[in-house]
Structure formats: structure tokens, C-alpha cells
Length: 419
Image 1: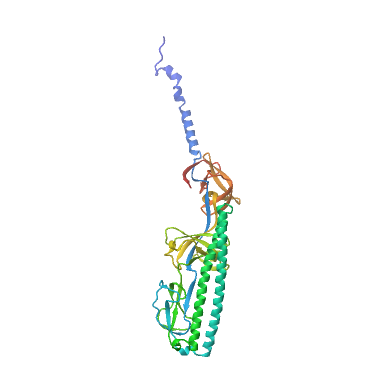
Image 2: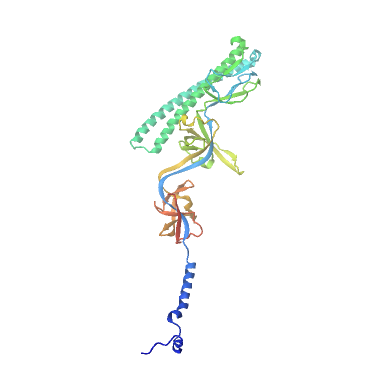
């Protein structure tokens, strides 16, 4: 048997290197090509995704508002004279027709001339007419309130039988609450008219010399309503003319909210709309109802120097006084006026929508890839948007899609928002 030649023999050198060594360049080339392909292969785009869900969706108009006393009365000097110092302070409690608010020392000669006599008689007649008008308004408000209250009771029974919608029930309740508030306002106006009549008659007696003391007694001005002193307009002693404002009296528990909104937003606000009042000082938001939107707007310069057309929206509190006992006149609140709401809406984050060619689109995650899809949207509150067509609950869409997200691009989710 012949032995194999040693590696250093001429025969081995003639046959060349082993086969595996001759294949090394090919293997290296394949590895290099693979590395180039891997380096150039498109990487998965990291994206943030959110699920399409069903749930309540509320669209609001957010603006600042201010509370104010519904019925306030400015106490004025009924006649010229020397005003004694007013020791009352804002917040003091007063009682109707009992609490003396101010004292005016008016000499009898000021009331004895013919012109003053005629003016006093005219004031009495005007005050009597105002009282009759206030009484008629009170009777009308009471009748309207009774009708609205009975209507609300009927609607409530139908609502319990699932015959009427919740919207109709809320509207009937708003009318009943508004009727009650109108009665309170009309009652206040009737008291004011009665007080003004008494003041006018007192001046007429003084000018006729029929008052006790012949009209030389100081003129004591009492409170016309029970409530609190809101402001003291004149505190120091001085000579005041007739009609000079002295104090402002009202009931701080009877509050309303005045909200400034853009005129284009005011068009969408309807009486009875729910209002959420936040940042008023309490832990929980307060609920109010829109009573009316004023028919005339006004121009206001914004903080950026832009002229804006605005309109006042007046809302009544729906909460009991006990929940807002610390809230007073001219307090600031942040109001959210509900202009549209739906309890079972198909919602998608507004950040996932983008416009293309006049229509709205989203990127849907399908098998790890982004697929563009056209959708039809409805209402939006800036955070979530109602989807009418194009999506179903449970699908996941890309929010804040960047330039790297294209149709068919591979994606990797970094976070799932909206769980």
C-alpha cells in the first residue's frame, strides 16, 4: 500500500490548497452582501397607538365667567341734604323695612316750594303705577311657574315609562326651574316697587308739612329687602343731592353666572344647556343651566390685541346654596357650556386624524404595518372625535403620525394611549 505524500512534498503542492480554503472569498462576499442588505433594510418605525373606543363624548365651549347677584338694589338719597356717616360694611346682614341704612338731615324749607311739591306728587303716582305693574308681573310669573311645574310632573311620569327622551325631560325641568326663579325675581321687584312707593309718600308728607315734627326730622332710609350689603358707595359725611347712590343691597345666595363667549359660539348655545363651573374655589365642579343668550353682542380687545365680537350667556345655578355658600358676587369661575353630547359615541383621538385632499384619514395598525384609511367624522372636543364611518371599536390607530409613517410601513408600538 502506498502512503500519502507529506504536505511538503511536490505532489501536495501540485494539488493546491484545501477546498474550504478556496471557498473563503465567496463566504466573505456573501456575508458582506448580507450586512449591506440588513443595513439598508427599512427599519420598523416606532409609533404611539391608541384604541378606537365607545363611550360618552361631550363638546363644550370653555370660557371664563363671573357670578353676580340676580336682583340688586342701589339705595339712593330720596332728597338732598346732609348725609350722616354710614357705619355699615359690606357683608352686613339687613332686614327689609327694619334695618336703617342711612340718615339724611334735610331741612324743611327744601321741601316746601311748589316745584318740589309737584315733583313729590308725580313721584308718588309713578311709584303707584310701578307697584301695579310689578304686582301684575308677579301674578304672571306665578301662573307660568304653576304651569311649568305641572308640565314637569307629567313629563316625569312619561319619562319613567320610557315614553319621552331624556332631552325632553331635561328641557321640562329647566322650564320648571326657570319659572321658580322668575317668581323669586318678580317677588323682589314687587318689594322694590312697594318700598319706592313708601319713600315717595314719605317725601310728599314732608313737603306738605304733615309728617311728624313738621318735616324737620331726619330722613331715615331703611332696607327694602332682606339680604346683605354688597357695597358701600358713600361712607363719609357730606352733602348729597337727590338721587345720589349710597349703598348696594342684595341677596348673595341668589346668584347667576355671566359668561363671555365668542358670538360664533353663542349661536350654538341653547337655553337649558348644562354648564360645568370649575376653578371656583371648591373641590367639585358646580352645575348650572343656561337661562338665555343675550341678543346683542359687543366688541372686546383680546390679550393679543385682536378685536373680537362677544356675547353674554346667563346661567342659573342648579346646585343648592349649601354647596356654594362661600361663593359671592363678582367671583371668577371657569365655565364649560355643553353644546353637544352623546353617551355612546365611537371615539378616536383627535391627534390620530390628518387631512388629505379635503377628507380625513387615519393610519390603522394591521399586522404590524400602517395602513391609511379614509374616515368620516362628526363632533369633536379637541381631544376626542366622533367617527361616523371607516373605523370600528377595538382597532388601533397611530396618534401623532410623523413623516416616516407611510402606507405599508412596518411599525413598532412604544405605548398604547387611551386605555
